Amino acid sequence: MTGHDGTAVTHRRYIPYSHAHYGGDLVDGAYGLGMFGDVATELCILTDGDEGLFASYSDVQFKAPVRAGDVVEATATVVRTGKRSRTVEFTLTVVCRADPGRSPSAAVVLAEPIIATTATGTVVVP
Image 1 (tube, rainbow, N blue to C red):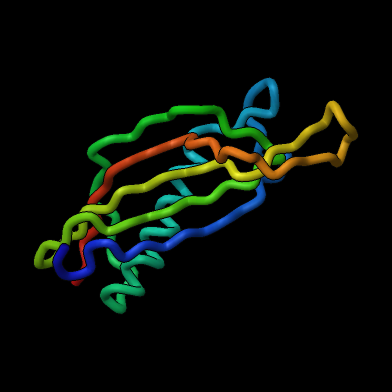
Image 2 (tube, rainbow, N blue to C red; image 1 turned 90 degrees about the vertical axis):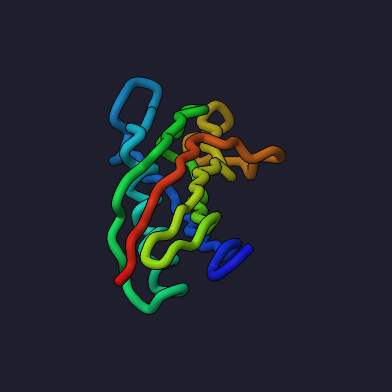
C-alpha cells in the first residue's frame, strides 16, 4: 500500500421511517449512495485536507434490502492513491433492524451484519 491506501472512515446512522419509499418500509438505494458521498467527503478531508470531488462510480451492487428502522454503517476505504485521484471501496452494512413483530418499538442488534450495498468510486482532490 502507498500514500493513503488503507485509510478508512465509517459513519453510522439510524434510518427514520420518514425515509421509507416502498412497501415493506423499504428505503431506496440512493439513501446508501448519499451516505457514501458523506464518508468520501470525510475521507478526503482526513487524507488531503479538502472535501474533494466525487468523480464517478465504477461499480454499484445492491445486495440486500435496507429498511426504515435499520441502523446502517457506511464505510469508505482508500484502495489506490493517485497523484490527484483516490479509488475508494464503499460498503453499506445493516447492523440493527426493527422487530415490529415483537412490539412497535422493538429492534435487535444483528448477530451477523448484512452487507446491503457495495461500490467502487473515484474521488479527486486538488
